[in-house]
Length: 260
Length: 260
DNA sequence: CAGTGGTCTAGACCACATC
DNA sequence: ATGTGGTCTAGACCACTGA
Image 1 (cartoon, chains in turn cyan, green, yellow, red):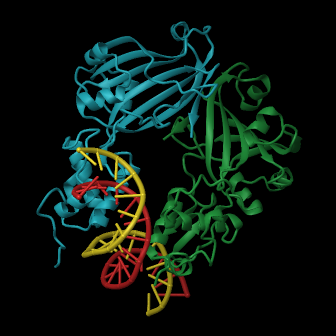
Image 2: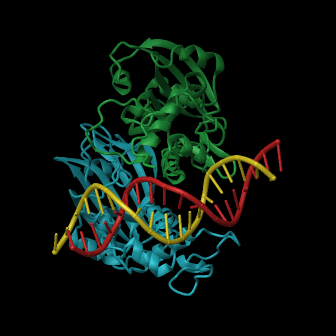
Image 3: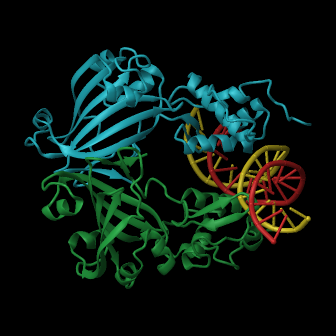
């Protein structure tokens, strides 16, 4: 029973992920090709964030390989944060909803150890603007491209903590400024999942120290010229495309940025 | 051939890791117990950083379980950064020597993208001191315990970048201040491996913004009261014990802290 | 060449969720 | 009771390394 060329059914083939430019004849193991096929199907929206994937056994039958091989593909996706598994229940597309609050997405803490959460945000501004150089570079767009600009203030207890200026490419997240304005979501990434079927899987952040501007100082309730943390974040989707560029300005008289 | 109670040979038992207080009768899978046994043997120094472990097959025979189970234990250790594997060569205890420079241990970059490396350090001071409150808390020691204090300046190109004050508990790293003074190592963690058989597996960092003191400003070649990043690092060993507490002060006119 | 890790199989049994 | 993921086995074959 030679099952060598099982390239007829489903997406098991080289272009499975839709990525161009495969290096060369570097043969990928089967579990890797299955992984790419499954990621592609998640990407297509076949199963939306929070929804359940078929079982290992079903997928094994479907692709014509053994359960162990499919299992390895899925475990990879777990490690990448694309799906989560629950014993006895099933495999689910990851989502920022629920209790999924890894430190990498929420690095700000109060000195007493409490996390500065996102659900106490005060939305100050939502509008469509033309991308300036820094924003365009962060989002891999041309300067002047349309982007939603969202400004919000995160509070902790009764104190201001972080001032955020967020940019979303209008090409991908069309009309996000309107939706955010209307919904004032407690989690921006959940909104991206629900409205655009976009899953943010990882972020990259650059941290610097500088002095607060007058405007920032006023909003953060500190004196002008106080030292603040400036965190520049780029958020990436499953397909490794930037979907968000944001600047977070945090006072650190009572807060800090944690990397664990 | 029932191999149910294979608890005679080797460290396959509950106290394998030397950790106290196992939660309760929570049965651990075999690969987990093998993993703990292997970690324990690494911890004991049976194989030192850079040295090769026995092969999967050998270990499988030794413990009396199948190769796949041992494999799973080892792959866990790879994920934890305890060992590395090279196809065709073997499995080796991880080491900070060589090209092992993960971003988590070296988060400082110059604005042009070059990493601020550790091997351009200027050692300014090495002495034995009594731990102050912050240091003691960071290292889980009593206030006043003996600690090596090491102050060094990291440079990038011809510019000063990061001023570091490092504390190592003398109880674990006896006489480290003398050894560092003599060797002026390019990598502190390699020194810990070589002299104390201690492997730093992960660090936790708190980042804040503040104004430079006069002394810091002088050493970092910036004006007094300039904003700087203050990074407080706690480094942990394999057994999850703190071995180092350091304060890094970084100017960010030309440098930044990266989290990836 | 012999030895290493890496892949894959086809099955068995278990613990846990759900109805 | 059924179906899910989680563990474990005993073997096969492959690709790569190094003497």
